[in-house]
Structures are given as C-alpha cells and as structure tokens.
Length: 437
Image (cartoon, rainbow, N blue to C red):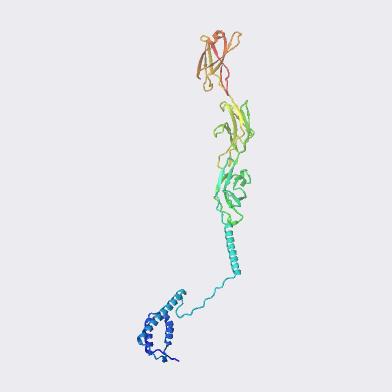
C-alpha cells in the first residue's frame, strides 16, 4: 500500500502566512468561521506514493498550486461572509445592550368569538347610557328664577287696568295692592296677565274704597325656585264715575229740559255737540237736596236742529275721587227762534212813502211783509218787499203798488209791518204803522 505523507512544515507555514495576509481585512465577527476553515486546511494531507519513485513536489510548482487554491478559498470565504451579511440585514435590529440575555417573546393570544361579542355589547350599552344621560340633561329645563315683570298702568275712560307682559313659564300671575296706611292684598290670577283695579277691590266703589293705592306684581310658579322678584311699584288713584243720567225729557213748547239729580255731582252740562266745549250751558244747582233739575233752553241756542246730551260734573278738589259721568242718551231738539219786531213804521199819505226803523242785530232780515187795509169794503192788500241789505232804516214807496190795484193813499185805513224770517227763524210779530197826512 502507498503511504500518505504530511505536508512539509515550511510549506504549511508559507500557506498559513499567505492565507492570513488575504483574510486580514475580514470582519472580526467572521473569525470563528475562518478559523474552522483554517483548521480543516491544516488537517488536510498530501498523499505521496512511496512506490512511485517520484521526488517530492518542487517548491515552485507547489507555490502556484497553493496560490490558486488560496484564491479559490478566499472567494468561497467572501461568498460565505456576504451570505451572512444578507441574513443579518434581514433580521430585526436588536435594541438590547451587549451581554444582555434575550427574553423570550410572549405569544399573543387571540380573543375568542364570545369575548369579542361581550366587548361589542358592552360598548353599545355604554354608548346608549351616555346618549340617554345627554338627552335627559338637555331636555329637562334647569330651574331658574324668572325675570321680574314690568308693571304698566293704563287709565281708561271709566277704569284702570294693571298689566304685565305675558310669560309662558309662569303658572299664574300675582298682583298686589296696598292702600296708603293699610295692608297689602294679594290677588292670584291663573289665566290673565292683566287685572282691573275695581276687580282687585272686589268691585267695591263706595266712598271708603276710593283713594290712593300702590300696586305691584310678580310671576308665580308651582316651583318656588322659579318665582320671580316683584315688579316696579306704581301709584294709582281709585276713583268712581258719577252715575249716568237716563231720565232726561224736553218740553218742546216751553223749551224746558228736566232730569233727576245725581249724587256727588256739583253741576250739569247740556251738550249740543261732540266737542268738549260744545255745550249750551252749565247748570249749578243751589242745593243738593233738589230732586229734579230744570233747565230753560230758550234764547240759549241759535235756531237749528240739535242732539242734546247731559253730563253730571264731579268736583275737582284734592280729596275728591269722583269723575264726570258718561253723556246721557241723545235727545233730538229742533230749536226755532223768532225775529224781534221792527221799532217803528211811519206812512205819509202825501208822498205814499213808508219808513221802517229796526235793530238789525235783533231783527236780522232784509225782507218785510206790509199789510194794507183800505177804508172801503175791498180786501186787504199784502205787499212783500225785500231790500238789498239790512239797515237800521228802510224807506219804501207804495205809490206804484197802489196805482197797480187802482187805489189811492187816501183810501188806506191802516198799515202793519212784519219782519220775515226763514228756516228755523220765525217771523216777528206785526207792528202798526203811524199814518200821517
């Protein structure tokens, strides 16, 4: 059998030096791998056939083969190192310090289907609970005190009204009234935001209830915390209106107006129009014990058609709490006046002229009626004459009139003159003329 001989020592050392020189730049982390590779190379042997008779390998030829083998070995080692670097780059970076032992990672347990359902149901229930709390919080109004009302007082023709603004949150309205020097009274009104002072005094209108009062109000609620503060306070005067006259009558022949006396009235006004100053007269009875008031309307009006109304007048004194009555029912009244007669009338036969004198303010007309009576049995002659204007003296020539009817001045027995009115103005009474030759 042929025997194998180990590699000579000098060749092995040369091989190791070249190998170490080529791997000097490798990373220290790969030292274990290189060392293992070196050990495998050291144990390798070169087999020499003793019987072959050949001489040992020449140094030059061995050097070339070793160099080729070394290059191939370096190529393999570089490939192994590159492969290890790629594997390390794919591994997650470790944040642990050097020398620290790696802790084993706990495996994550997946939740069961039942646990997931329980978590979902619990979340839904919690969300519903939060929603219900929010809804209840928003829907239930907070109990807040209502703002105090503003009190207003309106004086009507025969009443005083107390008013506050309407409040939807108020269950009722409270009104307070206090007479000067007295105690306050409370009136609770559950429906209306206004009240009349007469209602606050239980509809009393006697003398004892009249006077000065202080009034205020507030909004009421079943919840005491919501009741408002009191409003502003106002001073009011509670008065009573005098009774209305309902029994007035008028005598058209005598022009007398009569009606019953009204308690606490100091006078009476007879109106002929709607205006405040359109009254005929104001009557002041001399005694309050008179039961029937009589007013003579003659010569108190101009001629015309009127609607008369009567009003009882109250005192305007400081301690008087009565007011004037309403106007009575209208009474239709046609008032006619009569012209005053002329002053004088004089007829002169020689000239057939008649002269008339008058007061043009009292006999306010330019139209006259002259009635001529003759001494013969012939009928009276009535002549109407209208002058151009009203004057204190007027002269009328009767000659042409007498000639027209074939009469002479000597046949005239008497002459009378009447002032002629119109409309609601009646004719005056007749005045006889003086006849002169």
